[in-house]
Structures are given as structure tokens and as C-alpha cells.
Amino acid sequence: MKEILEYITNYDDFPQKGIIFKDLFGILREPNIFRSLIDKMASSQEIQDSDAILAIEARGFIFGSAIAFHSCKPMIVARKPNKLPGKLIMKKYDLEYGSNILTIQKESIKKYKRFSVVDDVLATGGTAKCVSDLILSAGKEIVGYSMVIEIESLNGRNNLTGPVNSQYNII
Ligand code: AMP
Image 1 (cartoon, rainbow, N blue to C red):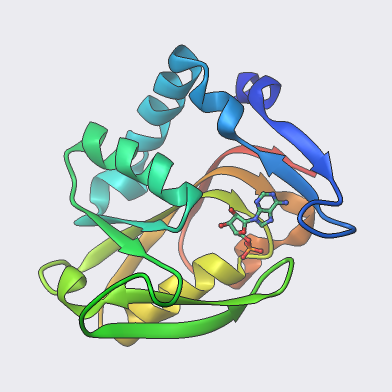
Image 2: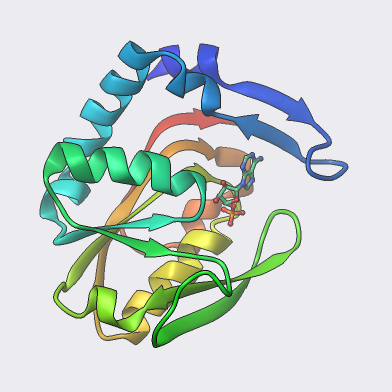
């Protein structure tokens, strides 16, 4: 989906030096582009084969909820610490910039077996691997990963097992 590139803005050295931040919010300001992106992501095999969408905070929520709505699938959230109540599973991971912890409510995944992970950008793959490890540790399965863009040079997909479906690859 080459046309989405036009609506992605690159910001050099944000949030820290050396990072080229991909700002995807321009896509949301173009309803037709956003709609065709979601049509495409929601029709992927991984989404179709999953019991639930697992969306990663924060921008993954935007794309994940649109995909969940479109495909009529439940959506589960993976959030940063101190955001979710109840019993949690949690894991620390390294980012392209810094490190973080992600948490998932135990109760939220109980009913489902096969999850499809959704996020805006696949960079090093640390974030997606973290949620995937959490799901696997709970005895569940990951069907695949749906990303809007993938920064190919960072080889994030090598950290992941299962198919990665990204709409555009950036080197
Ligand atoms: P990673 O764990 O390195 O694959 O990073 C993916 C997560 O960090 C996603 O949730 C992205 O939103 C965010 N991220 C990492 N690198 C970038 C980037 N260059 N531009 C925008 N978001 C990024």
C-alpha cells in the first residue's frame, strides 16, 4: 500500500537522537486512506484466523480497534504499567529507544485461544515479541502480526515466530 507513505511524516531525532519517528496520524486525517488501510489489514489471513485482536498501547489501539470493528472480532489490550486493574501478566522488554513493561489482564484473554497482534510500527520487534511471550506463557497461541509499517532494516520480524503482515516496508 504505497499510497499510505504520503500520509506518514518522518521526524528526525524524536523522541531521542538517532531515531526517525514515523508519525502515522496523517492517515487518520484521510478517511478514504484510513478506510482502505483497515479494509486491507482486516482481510488478512492472520486476522481472519484469530479469535481476538491483541492491540498494543497506544497507537496499536487505533488500528486494532478499527480492525476489530471491521472484522467483528473481540479486541484485547496490552498496556503500560499502572493502567490496567485486576490480575495481570506482565513482561519487561527493550525498545528501539529505551525499555518498557507491558501488561495484559488475565481475565481478558481467558475465553480466547488464538491472537493476532496489531501495532502501528514494527521496528526491532521487541514490543511485539513481549506481548507474544505473554500470550504464549498463558498457554495461548499467536496467529500472526499485523503492522501498518515495518522498518525492514531493523529485522524485527526475525524476533517473531509466525507470519508478519505489514502494509508497507521502509528501509
Ligand atoms: P519495536 O519494539 O522496536 O518493534 O518498536 C515498536 C513500538 O515502538 C511500536 O509500538 C511503535 O509505535 C514504536 N516505535 C518504534 N520505533 C518507532 C519509530 N521509528 N517511529 C514510530 N514509532 C516507533
